[in-house]
Length: 115
Length: 207
Image (cartoon, rainbow over all chains, first blue to last red; front, side, top):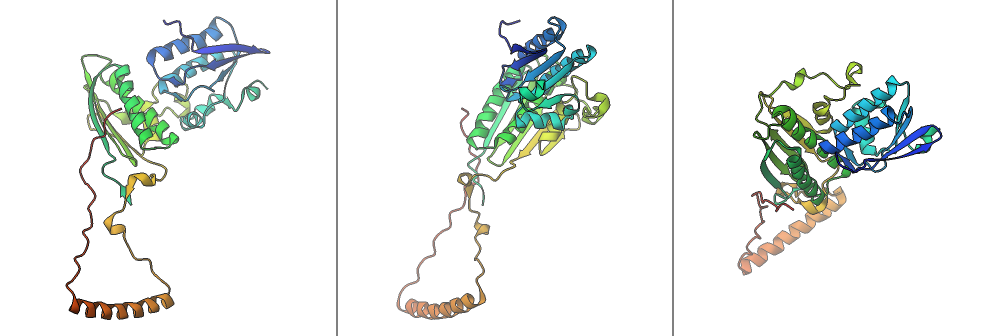
């Protein structure tokens, strides 16, 4: 596993806000490492309210979507909440076309997500 | 108007079953789409679908066996994207896949690739064996003028109002008489040749 971080984390009240750093989330290793970092927020750090900020993300593959779904399941099992924010119009359309906006709560900004 | 034949990028590749090799091809595709000034929304759709097709061929078709190759044929113009991706695996029936957008399958972490391709491409076609897929995407916005040439059959006279038409008819009759008189006095003028558009496909160098 590389030393490259794929998210930065900050806490606001009892929310964990994780900002994804990669612009293109397609590479197998990057997707795996991103998944590990996200899962650690739930399984190791114990956060129950998570917001993912997609400001930097311009493209992601279906494999990356799979990691997000796995994260959603880990959060759901712990009765937590997972929200996504600052998603580009293209990626938003991707979520809509795949009906994933029925699983994920999608907000326009961080402020909306933690309101 | 139609896209000039010289604006056609055609490439054929055979790559090992490694995703980094596929990404190298995708980088070239993105540069070419940029050169042909495709809109960002279409570029996103092509990037997504082509990525899925390549990854499916490598992971599912060839089982990531590096000894098996993936053949890729690409044709890109300012108007149309076409990609054919073929693996060396046994194939599969794409119609047998569950719909990942249905309630029962929404929370599955995988199985969205084919659905994605069909959602974002103009057409998706699998060969009967199921080891080759052809993706086609037509531009969703008008082609920039710089890439267009006039078709000979597009040249038409614009209809005029009746009054203008009568005046023009009278002028034409008079002019015809003058021309006839001039021709009787001087040799005829040769008509100009209409240049035909170049029909051969020219490969534009890869960046």
